[in-house]
Length: 575
Ligand code: FES
Image (cartoon, helix red, strand yellow):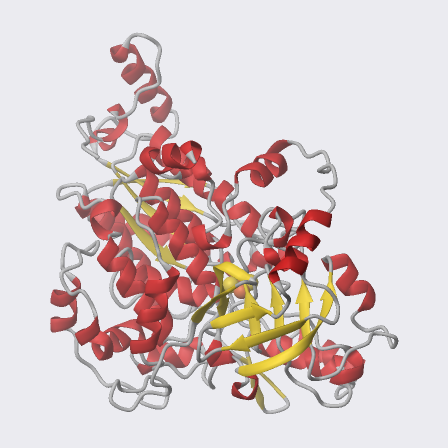
């Protein structure tokens, strides 16, 4: 994008048919906020602040935003903060993913509509960082991402706790009657005790690492704990960097490229990151016309080692990752596999950044490439007649004993069906079966919730069963674990093969072959397809309707087709 607009307040004028009047009126109204004429001549750095009373992870943003403003002033700019939608993961119904695209549109349009020369994006909780990067990529104004940083851990009876892997672990124990109602109530108050994002390598932490790898944050800032003084120093430095970018603009389209996206996929694999991040990175890249291929993803997975020992896959928490060396230490280990000529927000290439970095690395948390935790990546895409456009398995969080397995399907046709029957004493299920959830994909009424982590039926959980194969078109929280096949595409709601599975069918998972197969003859599947009833869609309105009509499938990042670059959107319409 070329930008021949004037700087600062005179940029992007309100249209009254008289530009001079527009500038005069704007200056006059800005003066009413106490700004002098001298200050109003400065270039402007917008600060997209996603603080909200409904977002515990962004609780500390009021303090952080002051540090950002200080940095902008030091860099010679005028900081102007503006609010955007915030997405507090656990406070949104039916699921936060549904609103990620809305936040991305809000971010993009407010960057475009308001007079700013650069922008600092303040996000953190799961969907906020991808939403901001999607919006910034589309607006293509110089932008620096600043993340919230992770929560600190807490203690319960001498044991270390952190949201949200431990939330699920203890809930599983409670369901299996291993701990009492009093104990789970005590634990509830200790899982999330500071500001910041979930304390493990969940979606928020994964997206922070991806943003840093892409080059959209300042180096070394992804893992700084939310409450650490370094977080405020990073905020100040981010403000200053954004102000300085105005002289030498580097746009998101110069930073987020095919090569930097591939670097980000490598890091996602090496950190054993969240399955959600594949959807988000696909959507961010898609805003710039870059396609993430799941076939290429599998090639990268085969040659990228797992290096990071954090929950939910390993042992540590994000604060350990920060003190162990953070993203920089991982990037240094992966250096021979990375594209080093990628540009970053500082104006340095990734190679220049890494050449300048040294420092001790805690090998208990970040392994060396020569002695990795696992020789291949933490995530893998599966294909087959059950998922012609792919599905995702987090193999690093799964039980290896289930990697090559055939089993009998136990099918739930919706989330409601699942919650009604999963704990029924009459449910015909054994530990060798495969649980299947249908109609929980992006176009379903539930909007692709993090329901892919189907609970182990209570009867089996009480016998001590911890894992079984579960398959769905839903997502899974980045903090969860298990042998869980997700993001099946196309989804059941649009007639994908997942809709054709019936109780008692045989299904085969082969991680070695990267396949997920429904062992039912083609003729029988065709007969079932013909018999599928096509119920009249429930009436929907407003954003709910827009979402249902426009959301793309998981392998396309669940973005809206009309938000993609014009060429891609035109191609979509032509199909
Ligand atoms: Fe915000 Fe987990 S709830 S990152």
